[in-house]
Length: 325
Picture (cartoon, rainbow, N blue to C red):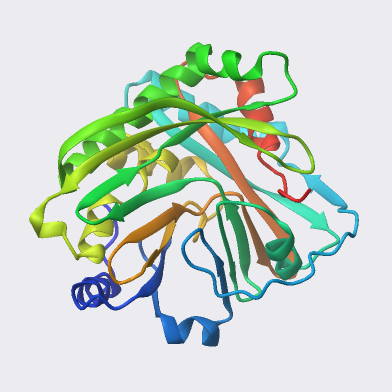
């Protein structure tokens, strides 16, 4: 069972029915739901840079050379959770499990400087607590249409024929098919006429450390009447996001909570901006959090029965980057 839902989901329903703009954040376990009307955003030390909404001033980005040191989780520690996940996959308790860890990092920038200097589709700085720079849309609503863009599968772009390798890799393809299928089913709970519009699109992600290719698809549907102008009810039904959880959802969540030796918090949760008519939301990944004065980068990937330990450990480390160039 998922944890009890927060009353702020009801507030989101009320505001969206009244067509009042607001920004929201829901953590991974749906235990913390924060809602900010437009006039409350700046009071809460919240900086937002979305495609359709920004509350930031353009500032001089600075040209200071980035010094990022990563202290990755040891192979031994990573393997404990990985083996537990693989055993559950073998037993048929899950067929895709998104396994993540946190790695300590040191960087010669503040969270605010990281926010301003990074380049991403979605960026948020929350107080001096966390910053993320996510490339992944969760759901968009335009009129009565809903869209989702599952992103699953990455590869180092410097590898020869990297995009073709990614598209044809048996493990990555299986993982992508699974997430597309899962999100098609999820969308069917809130929408009719659900269809796959685009499959296995390859996006280029430029970073200072290394460039990556990521694989995405696009799914759309027409919102059911009971979910129109009800953003809270919609999120309550769709979350946790399938792309960062796995399938089937309830059992896979149990596996994740046992395998991971830390709390995700807002990492892999969802946040979004409702402008009074339409919604744009993202999955909170590529995430740096401050804990007791130290910085931690949370990262991971989808594990299937085809996953190899060395490949998954490498992918988890590949995703520890800051998109500054």
